[in-house]
Image (cartoon, rainbow, N blue to C red; front, side, top):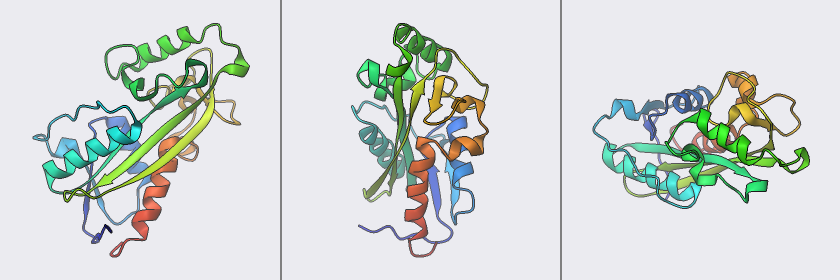
Amino acid sequence: MAFLFSSLVDIILATRNKKKIEEIRRITQGLSFTVLSLADFPDCPEVVEDRDTFEGNAVKKATEIAKCTGKTALADDSGLEVEALGGAPGVYSARYAGASGDDGKNCEKLLSELRDVPDEKRGARFVCCMALARDDGSVHTFFGYARGKIGRELRGETGFGYDPVFFPEGQDRTFAQMSGQEKDGLSHRGEALEKLTEFLRGRPGL
């Protein structure tokens, strides 16, 4: 089913993560729609991320928020996959060390798990799946990836999540040592959003 957007369409970001909202708004700046967040819809419930894939979680969040608000919803699920850990932490990235969203403890646990892993085996990638859903149940998904390696200590003050320990491929700085614009050009979320924006530009009315 095709999406038909008018120039006045609102898109709801299915997240309350302020840093993620800021990043998505920055990358989608200039498109012909208004970006809102769940802060604008306090009655919407928290969506439990209980699927075993990034796509499953993103689709679940987007469809539930679309039904709750009656508007088009955009959700993402993203995380870090480390080769030496068999793809972990994966969909559990945000709660790898227990409590959800404790970036410091998650990074600390990751570095501890990789303490004895040599540099040449510290390959990893960030994965992002974006799901765009309407309240009629129609959904489109978009994927992005950022390949690189895990460092041995925290570096940098910007970004969030595992940014201070992740060196994108071909770079000698972590995501947390880059400006937002630099990261956008290399990140998994930036790639997924680029695909999303190309899709939206091709919709009637945009």
